[in-house]
Each structure stands twice: as structure tokens, then as C-alpha cells.
Amino acid sequence: MSTSSIVQVLRTPELLEQILLCLLDDLHPLREREDPRSVRTDHNASVLKHLLSLRRVNTTFNVLVISSLQLRRALYLYPAISRTRGWHCAGLTGATLDAPILNPVVQTTFPSYQFRFWHLSLEASGNKYCALMIITRDDIHQYCRRASSVKGKLLPKMQLSIPPMAGMEAVIWEERDETKDYVGRTTELEDCVIRPTDGKGLMVDELHDRVGEMFEKHKDVAAIKLTTL
Image (cartoon, rainbow, N blue to C red; front, side, top):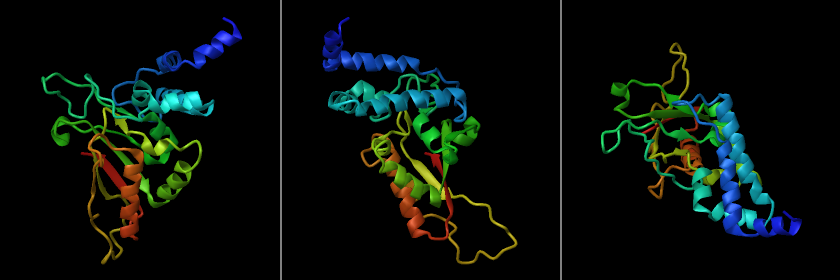
């Protein structure tokens, strides 16, 4: 194929979209409730970050990545519904559903969050899959710097999982010395349930905005644990 033919292909949105979708074939299948520290999670994050970085090639690539519904779903930029996965262990038909896929870009970009599945029994979880993360006050400051960078521009708009997450509940997370006096300190967070504003799926920026508000309201809280609803 001549150089002019290659350029013409890359300038044709429909053909370029198919080429970029083929890059998703490099994603590794994950084990049930995959460990966020695994090689597969790290690899999949690299594949998605590479696709996201192609926006910087030129305007054609940028417009395609942020407008193609198929690419946006694969890149966690739009809520992706799954017939085989769900937050409830059983679907409407009674069939057993596989666990959701947590966003590997979030897991590897913020390893200190320990964003992972909580292996609870069906009785304890209410027949649901449960994921958790822990965010500290310092994490919020680091997130704001990263999200405002050129590389992080799309990060705030990413979904946290496939299928989308309906929300998370926040509680105070810290180890306390019971021999000390904690009178007057915050014991419960106000407005502790975080839900997506559009009702479609919880995004990275919505989560951090709400957690940031909690830290602002409760000055003595150092870390917050979040679990899926």
C-alpha cells in the first residue's frame, strides 16, 4: 500500500475507527475479580492508555476517540452495559452473572487507592459483588494535579467499571488508638452516599468531588473508605 493510500485510510473516520477497535484485541481476559496488582491488569491499563494517547496524533484521531460510541465504551468514557456481567450476582432471568470489570486505568494510576473487589460471602454482600477503595486527604490533592494535566484530561470523565457503578458509600477509615481521647472528633460522615448525577454510572470526577467535599467539611478525617452500593 502506498503512502498516499495509507494517509487516505487514516483520514477516513470509518476505517480509522475499525483500526483502533482492533487494538482492543490486545486486552487480556481477566480472572474473576482480578487482583489490581496483577500483570494482566497492568497490561490492560497500558493498552487503554495507549489508545487514549492517540488523541494527540491529530484532530482526526482526537475527534474519533471522543466521538465513537464503541471506543468510548471500551475506554470507560461512556457507560457500557453487559449481558454477562453485573453488580448483582444474578440477572433478571436468574442466570448467574460474572463480576464487573474495574477500570484498570484508575487501578494503576492510583495504586494507593487499593481499588479492588471485596471478597464477601453472598449472605454478607446481599447477593452482590462488592468493590472498595480507600482515598486519603493527600490523594485528593494529587488527583487534582493529575486531572488538570494534558495526559489526564479525559481521566475525570472515565467510568469506574463495566457495567457502570450505581454509587458508593463512604465511611471514615483510620486506625485509632483506643487509649486516647477522641471526644469531639468526627465519627460519621454527612451525606455519605455518592451517586452519579446523570443516573447512568459513577465517574472519576464525581467521586473525587464528593470525597473532596467530605474532607473539606470534616477537617479531622484523614482517610475515607468507599464501598459499592
